[in-house]
Image (cartoon, rainbow, N blue to C red; front, side):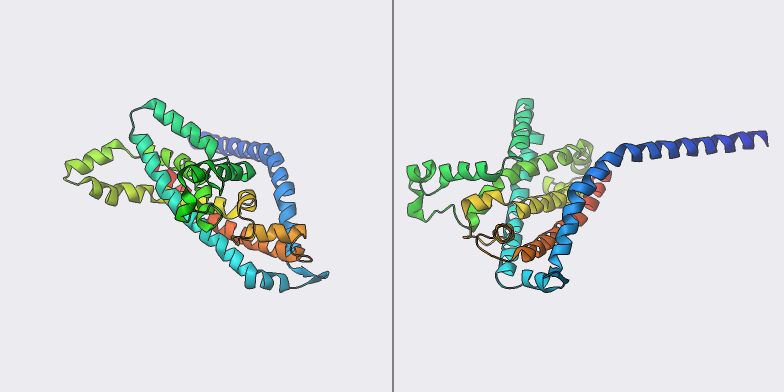
Length: 293
């Protein structure tokens, strides 16, 4: 009886200590939660209210217009561009990450990862000017090699996709390198000892283990390209229809007058797409972490 009573008190004390630790954790995170609620929650609420309001009254007209005509074309154009960048960036970034992981040069690994960390955050107008000066109509490479004679143009869909890959590939390298590091050498040795070829190892072991990270990286690149604005605005303007450019035109009132609430509806469409992307990304990331633990 005494032992059971002592054990019960110990368990109760442990649960109480755990509850206090959890409470302290919530209190420590409270300022950050308040910050997110003010910075992100406030604008999100205003977007929802504006998207469903016409002349001060509740209405679905803005949402319907955001999915018609040129708005729908721009939304689909952004989805198409983001899909191309995500798939191409995932393939190139994974191959580069694999080369880094299998390399025995520590200098090469640190150099690539450091450069990836910098380039993954290099975007906006400076990135656009960099590419215009290099591969634009009067760019150094274009004039030196006469690329315009071969029909080269930076100011179209594929040119913009190329520029987006400039920061998407390094981002994929940062995502895939830890996942590739997590592949146990013993798995490959066991597979080879059992008579498997390298392709069979990757098909039945490597790719299934890396699949969550690969798909997570794809949706991450998709989201980054889908939300990019400044680079496209500085490079292609209205030449390539993108939803971010349509929102900018509508909110500024320079091209589209009186369409501010439609712009908010387009923003809500983007939030829904981003929410769908994160709903896919987060479970995959958790699953990958369990495999590679």
